[in-house]
Length: 273
Length: 232
Image 1 (spheres, rainbow over the protein chains, first blue to last red):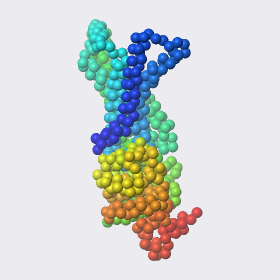
Image 2: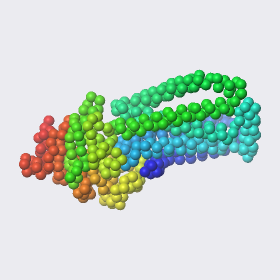
Image 3: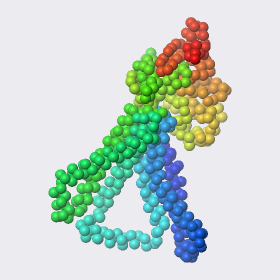
Image 4: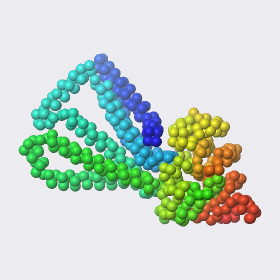
């Protein structure tokens, strides 16, 4: 059933993302051509016509923002409209488990986020790539790598892995937080929007507070070790490792709690208007 | 025979408003039941509770002896009183959707009924008229071989000719193993197909009776009795 839900979720969201990606990539190509022509002929539009010259760039930036915003907006819209409004009458009467409904939405939202990121990278590449781009990147990478190593920071594959994991955990966590806030709208049928926003703000404040307390307590408890790490042995890698994992694990724990809360509300406290 | 749907002291409260005030009700298979009451009497609330779309404030509602859940959703075919299908989907896609999720859904029968009522299956739902949308919803719901059909105002928005066809569809699609609950206030239209009636008023069941009983013992039509009970 999860497979089927995911399949239909992709159909419902793909009709928004795919045309958007297409338009964005085509715009990237057009802007590149426009810039190349401008360079080749070195023309400049006179006077107020210069404003027209900015139009391709403005369009490009707007589409760039749209691609990034869509990942969040569509995730909110799919969870709220598809589950909490009239469409919820269909979704919640399907013979599926509540966690399957949540997982299908979550997984698809995360996949589109990754896709949007890749499309943005591809677009930048279309805009600026030249035959020796990779050589230039390799050149700069070497400089950055060496100067970081000089300071005791080694940009290894392991570090890249850690960063990717913590980024992924962050993305998943932010969607779960949105879902939890939307689930909270079931507690007030008259002021759903207010309830949702209020819940989101409340969750944010609680998470911020708890994480600062935990960080402070951990910092004070291990102050000697930390001082050793940073000042005496200059073990920056160890420090970076530790902070990344502590914050990632904390994020995983809060995400699990929020997920369980969302699941509980949708299973036991559902109140569709 | 065991009850397919049972309510025990079922209460649903919205803020200060009590939509259901301790309802006790038992519905058995093999019958077509009219859930009849004026607007706002609690008909939709009762049906939504049976589908697990809202949670009881107190008391319980049981489908085949169990609270609403994945199992009950397999055996209930529900027609809500609103447009609940994705507007951007075509009729054909919706048939595919139902086919994917409900094992008891007969896609062939659904498409045949769509054709019979002149519904173009390539059209997106948002391009259909209000009446046609209702027909699509009802056909999808009635194309399942469910144990319990919960139809909330199934004939409100369609013309009398389609009404007859729909009622005919309901009778011919249902079987001895199923119960059909039709909530409506258009009593004269559905009266001919009902076996039993449940009158509900201001969140309370005021009368349950078989239609034959009403006709023989009271010498009244259901419509007539309804007008008497709910006289303003």
